[in-house]
Structures are given as structure tokens and as C-alpha cells.
Length: 164
Ligand SMILES: [Zn+2]
Image (tube, rainbow, N blue to C red):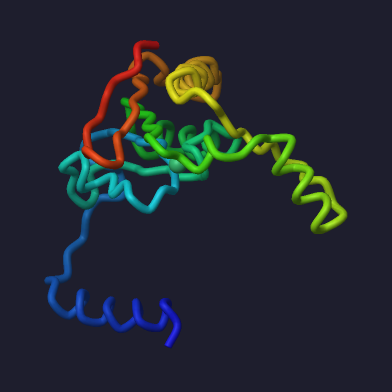
């Protein structure tokens, strides 16, 4: 049985154990979080959030790409979020590769150089600051004042704020 098949079975049990409910599409805490896809960071659990309270946008590294700006624009303009929290984390996979190296690897394996930027980083705090700046400078976002950046320690579960 594949992992996905196994999870479908688990979903049956979870759905059977929960009462149906309907939450508003607009996050009740008016908060959007951008973070890494890392499997050790359960964002809602780490922040004590409940269903329906915040948007969570994830990619490799928690990088502020054009697509993250697209999602934040929708989050703020259509769905009412006002604060933005950016969370990088210790022991991130993006610290373990280089843009040039990974690009060369993709091209060597496939014959095609990717059109996208790899966006690896070597300094967590510096990249958090860079990410905060990218959000603050995006004219597509009406709410750019309440943007804060953090590093999450995957071992201690603690968040540390990075001064912008
Ligand atoms: Zn990561």
C-alpha cells in the first residue's frame, strides 16, 4: 500500500470522528504566514493556531517568490489579512545547496536549464531580512507595515524574531 492510500484510510477515520462545521473563508486572525515546506514545522501547532485562523503559504525555503506575492495579494485584497509573518528555520535544506550547483545538476540531468531561480541561502537571518524587504516593497500588497520575520528552531520549537 502506498503512503497516499494509507492516508486516505486515516482521513476516513478523522472525518468520521469530527462533527461537520463551516468556517469563514477569511482567516479570523487576519494573518498570513509564509514559511518553508519543512516536514518538522507544524505551523498551526507551533503557534497555537486553530483551523480558519490564518493563511499558510509554503515553498522550499519560505522564499518570497512572485507566486508568494500573488497569494499574499489575494490574501490581503480579497480575504482580509492584515499582518504577515515570515518564518525560516534552522537546519533548512536550502542551506545545503547552491544556486549554481543545483541549476547545473538539473541541466546535466535533463538537458534543460530551469527558468526559475533556485533561491538558496547561506545566512538565515540575512535571508529573513531580504524576504521582509521583498514583501515591504511589493506595490501589489496594500498592507506592508505589519510584516515581521522569524527563525524557528526545529529542535527546541522556539521562534526568534529577526530585526528587520
Ligand atoms: Zn526549510
